[in-house]
Length: 80
Picture 1 (tube, helix red, strand yellow):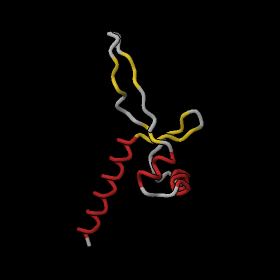
Picture 2 (picture 1 turned 60 degrees about the vertical axis):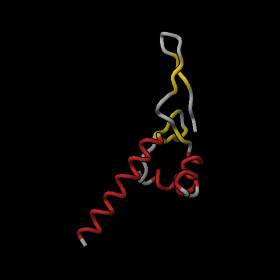
Picture 3 (picture 1 turned 90 degrees about the vertical axis):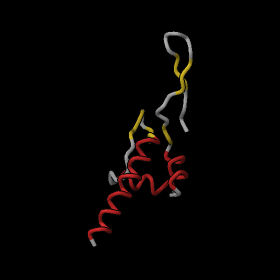
Picture 4 (picture 1 turned 180 degrees about the vertical axis):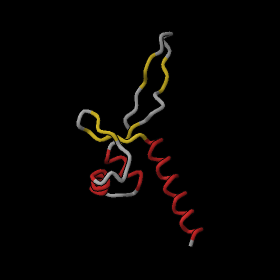
């Protein structure tokens, strides 16, 4: 996970809250093959951002995306 620290003006260090995952890390996190991540990106089926030519995924955004997908599935099941 791409993670770092930044310094406040006071000189104390704080951890960066927004952690980013690489495609390889995201594939492992979701239990997919890395190729599947790139396929989903090609069809805008997964939230990600390209930074200096490299795909990165904010873990909190992925977690919310999964949560929202689960809500949609529950709503569809209730309608049936």
